[in-house]
Image (tube, rainbow, N blue to C red; front, side):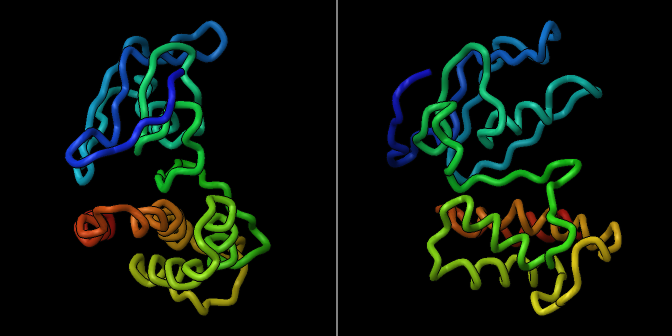
Amino acid sequence: MGASTSVIGGGPAISLRNVSVSYRDRIVFSNASLEAKRGDVIGFMGPNGAGKSTMLRVLAGLVVPRQGSGQVLGHALGEHRHVPFGIMLETPPFIEEKTGRENLVLLAKLRGVASGDIQKYCDACMRTVGLDPKLNVPVKSYSQGMRKRLALAQSLLFARLTARPACCPFCFRFCLG
């Protein structure tokens, strides 16, 4: 798909060219292009099945396009699974028997967050979305609202590590009302 490139100065943080994704015989989208600088706030609108969630999965490294090229934060598509980029999925993958904090800590470790920063970032994200990091109950006992807050904390964990954390308070206020 292409070599890694650096995000220099005001260069794009996201750059996609003619990206296409299909599942079996179903084309989700084709020849999609997108460019965004660090700090840009972007949104995807469209009817059900238009490919909005799939595009987010491409950007997060969870889906590799069948054609096209691009980079996310200086990493070529297909090579960027460990960049600090998070998304909030419709059905987030929690380990039900673990606490919310334990889920965040595990995710941070899997994504390569420096061990000295993990506790600080996880606790800050939980507090920001209105969850108590000391809440010592398994996720399976969380209400739906608490689960959504934990999913938001998961996605925002990586926003704290990016070059533009100043947009985070806006995002938190927008998402939490």
